[in-house]
Amino acid sequence: MTEMASHIVKSYAQELNRLRDLLVEMGGLVEAQLATATIAIVEQDVDAAARAVEQDPAVDALEREVETFVIRLLALRQPVAQDLRQIVAALKMTSDFERIGDYAANVAKRSIVLSQFNLSFKLSGLANMARLVQESLRLTVDAVGEADAEKAIQVWQSDGAVDDIYTAIFRELVTYMMEDPRQITPCTHLLFIAKNLERIGDHATNIAETVHFAATGEPLPGVRPKGESANYAVIRPREPRADGAAAMES
Image (tube, rainbow, N blue to C red; front, side, top):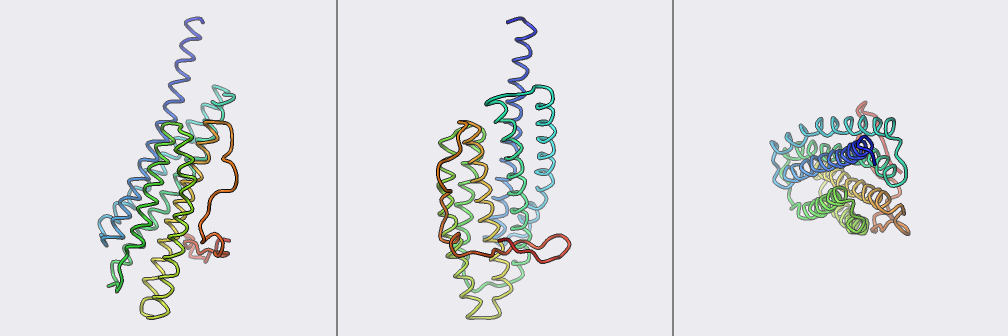
C-alpha cells in the first residue's frame, strides 16, 4: 500500500470513529436529560425540570451535526458493506436519540405543572418505570459505542417489562380518577408522563435493533417482545402538537 493510500485509509477510519463518538455523545446527552427529568418528577424539583428542558437544543444541534457528517461521508467516501451499514444506521439512531430528548423534555415540562398539586399518592410505580427506562437507555448507549450486538439484544428483550409497568400505572391512575374527580388533572399529566417514558423505551429498542443490524448485517429474529399494554392499547394519547391541535396515535 502506498503512503497516500495508507493515509486515506487511516483518515477514513478516523472519520468512522468520529461518527461513533458523536452518536455516543448524543446518547450521553439524552441519558443525562432523562435522568434530570426523572429527578424533576420524583422529587417535584422545578429547577431540575428547567435544566432538562434547557438541554434539548444541544441534542438537536448534535442531530444536525451527525446528519451533515453522514452526508459528507456518503458523498466523499462512497462506503460499502459494513461501513455503509454503520453510516446509514447513524442517521436512524440520531433520529431516535432526538425523539428521546423530546420526550424527556416533555416529561420535565409536565413535572413543572405537577409541582402545583399535592398528590395524595406516591409515585413509586412511575419512579420504577423511569429507572427501568434509564437502565435500558444506558445499555443502549453502551451498545452504540461498542457496536455490541449482545447488549443490543438485552435492550430489545427488556422492552416488555417497561410495557407491563406502563399498563399497571395506567390502570392505577384511572382508578384514582374514578375514585376522586379532583385527581383527574394531575393524573392526566401523569398518564402522559408514563406514556412518554414508554415511548423512550421504544426508541431505545429501535436503536438497539439498528445497532444489531449494523454490527451483524442481520435483523433481530422474530417479533419484538411486548408487554400487555401492546395488546389492549389500540389508541394511544400523544403529546399535543405545537399548534394546539389534538393528536392520537394508533
